[in-house]
Amino acid sequence: DLVDILLQPGEQLQRLVKDPYSSNVIRSLVVCGTPDHVKTVMKLFSQDVMKFSRNRHASLVLEKCLEVSAFGVKAVSLSQERLELMNAFFSTSRSASPPLLQIMLDRFGNYIVQRVIETCNGAEKEEVKRLLAMALPKLQSSAAGKHILAAAAKKFGFKVHSLAAGH
Picture 1 (tube, rainbow, N blue to C red):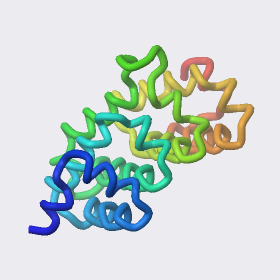
Picture 2 (picture 1 turned 30 degrees about the vertical axis):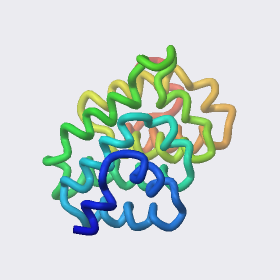
Picture 3 (picture 1 turned 90 degrees about the horizontal axis):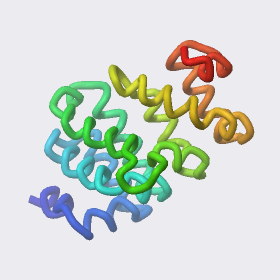
Picture 4 (picture 1 turned 120 degrees about the vertical axis):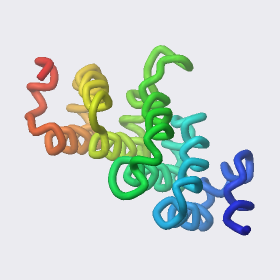
């Protein structure tokens, strides 16, 4: 059917998530479609979280993937894809610095970091806290960073200075 044609992995799906109009269609599919639809999109994002986090339209789709995979009826069936996506954010395989740190001050990436903070759970929380502590000086000195720290304070229930102390 049409949805399966749209969601075929590869260059077409990459173009669709970056396009101003079709990204809205893909975002709606993430919310209203089947878990298999969401899995296809999440697998694409796991391949290069940096590229998609820094793109205006793709980042909006990625935000929805983070939300749908953490909360709601699809979350359980998306646990493996979420694990892969979060590992992509935390990985140091492509560079010395994890992608989550590299996108923090990006004009679109900072929203992704806020969504990662809001939706993290279990072991993800500890890794997010660790990375935030590493980036604390940069975060404190920028507007986007202050938004990230506010999201962290809301999620984790502590003030900024306690992050560096390891709480």
